[in-house]
Length: 198
Image (cartoon, rainbow, N blue to C red):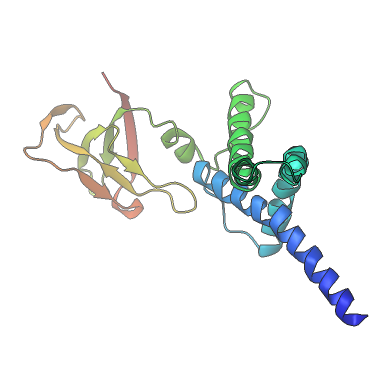
């Protein structure tokens, strides 16, 4: 009797893991690609993973029922399983992030990013960047598609793809010959200015 009970518990645990926890984990990892997550306790992550997993389970239950029927072709069955456990959770995370962005654009929700720094750099909008160093000097250049900025939880690191000579009053004069860019840590500068890419 005890062996039968332990087998049932093991079977239920496997169903919970495969049906809820794994898809929830996929969704959370996908969401973190769009918006880096802050460091949190494991108990908070379990709640989020479970919530994503339950949403996915409810939405994909019909597909799983169809896939479990004996007359469903094997190739279609595997495709439906992949959709339910990988593609579906990733799509849910993307839709959640996209919905947050759209609702924040019209003022219903707060912006999904932790700081204005993250919000600005997440747009990937090309611009000119002027960085003020602690000694009063200025460096600047093109912050275009190859440039990078680190986001939460470790923001402030900058890679400027093409360095330009800058005048004392902050005007961009000319590109630095054979420039491959510049990397700055948060401690390397005191202020950052942005200008439209024209």
